[in-house]
Amino acid sequence: MVVNGNVMCVCREFREELKMLETNKQFQKEEVLIGELEGMYQSYIEKDRHFFHFSGKSDVLAFFPDSSEGLQKAEMLALLLYQDALVQKDVPAKKDLLEKSWLLYQYVCAMANDFSFDKARIIKRIEQLWME
Image 1: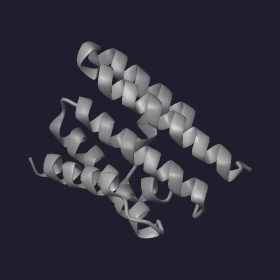
Image 2 (image 1 turned 45 degrees about the horizontal axis):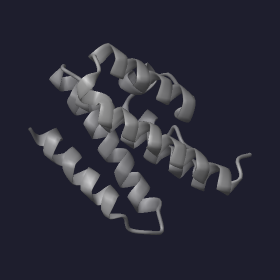
Image 3 (image 1 turned 180 degrees about the vertical axis):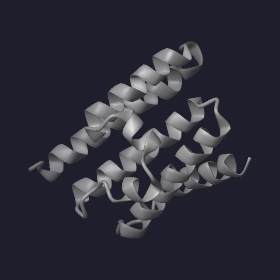
């Protein structure tokens, strides 16, 4: 069992790694970005990237247990799916990933005991991209 402090440390580490990926995105080839995303799925979500690409929305939502750790991982997955969608060239695949990310964010916001401007901003951005 992961202690709450350890979950927070892992979340901070995840956000730092994701920020580096976002910062370096314009300088890296698509294959490198996808490789880094695959590594993050394995390291933080403990599941292969393709599982979330090819699973249905209900399977993605049901993947996490109802716990604070499950909620943290759901938010990490929502961010990964969002970043993954940004590198997708295939429009239907991009929209599917955006929808899964949006659904996870809705779940996280419904279950969380707080409001986050960051989450609201990302949800709005996902909605804009999803409707393009």
